[in-house]
Amino acid sequence: DIVMTQSPDSLAVSLGERATINCKSSQSVLWRSNNKNYLAWYQQKPGQPPKLLIYWASTRESGVPDRFNGSGSDTDFTLTISSLQAEDVAVYFCQQYFSSPPFFGQGTKLEIK
Amino acid sequence: EVQLLESGGGLAQPGGSLRLSCAASGFSISAYGMSWVRQAPGKGLEWVSGISGSGDSTYYADSVKGRFTISRDNSKNTLYLQMNSLRADDTGVYYCARRYTYSTSWHPDAFNIWGQGTMVTVSS
Image (cartoon, rainbow over all chains, first blue to last red; front, side, top):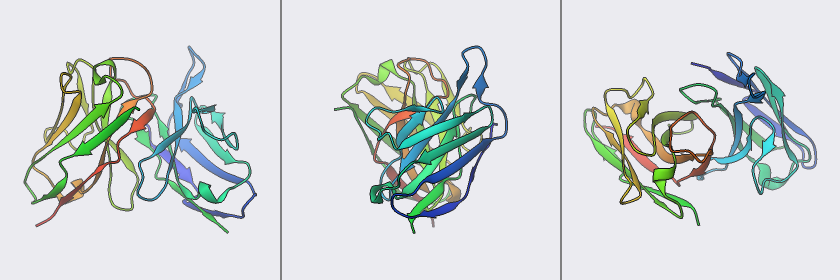
């Protein structure tokens, strides 16, 4: 199994500041034949299901604000929120879909400082 | 509007059974591989099971293999999860989820459509 590890477990950032969440995979999730990283990011607010933010490591899902950016390749990935808004308070998960089973990171809880 | 609506959760005793349902609207589940994903209280997300659009191919996490069975009734546009020999660590919210890619096969994928979830509690 490809295991995903996120850091930090929790994060407090001031409104308008940058938030950075890291995700590391135990093996590469880069498919070299198409040069795509099989990595997604989700946002989950209390009492709600996860919401897909980013897929292919850096492609924003339709309707997701452009302050959310995904980057990285191979085994190391980052989700950056460029200017934190109050509505961004949530738990964020990364997920690999390179191989079965699809595996999620443990989550990073983002709060306002 | 594309939606998934789970039902069937509740309280079960250890060793007992439950059957979850996931009714889809706004799209045909036969066109997509579908999955069940669960979340223990206050914990992260765990993929549980997946099924192809035709239902011919099924996949399970090691933690549920031999105890859970995924199925679908495309005529009812509904996905199911039969859960037997339930254990306390099966407790959590169970979500059905649609793979991002328009494909009848099941393959690991991002999930872009999620239901609201149904709570399963296994306790004596």
